[in-house]
Image (cartoon, rainbow, N blue to C red; front, side, top):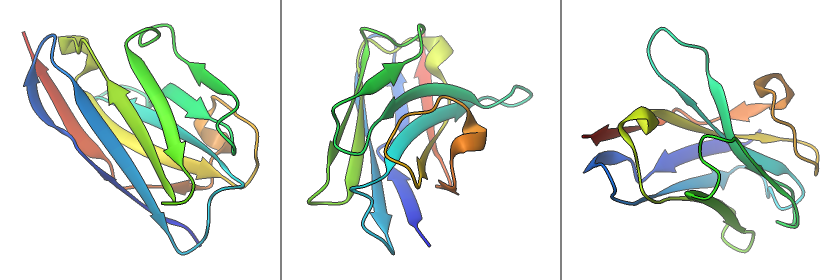
Length: 124
């Protein structure tokens, strides 16, 4: 079993930055791909970004490309999401998830373990 805990969310104004962390426990996730998803009330959870097991491959949604950056520190069993130039439409609960495979997938169905989420609110 893998437990994932997100942190770093909060309330910011448009144009600001936040860094989210996803700390894993219970198992070493260095061999697993990790993704970030987000969800607003009444909408489907959507893919944001994912990173392969060794960080060699990443995939970003068009809505965050150029503003967000995913990275991982396998020594700390942690994945990070640096979010820059935040916009009100980035407001959502952000979830990290991992899949017990090395390669990236953008579908939430491909992920086996999920965190509880952290709220990000961006005001205009």
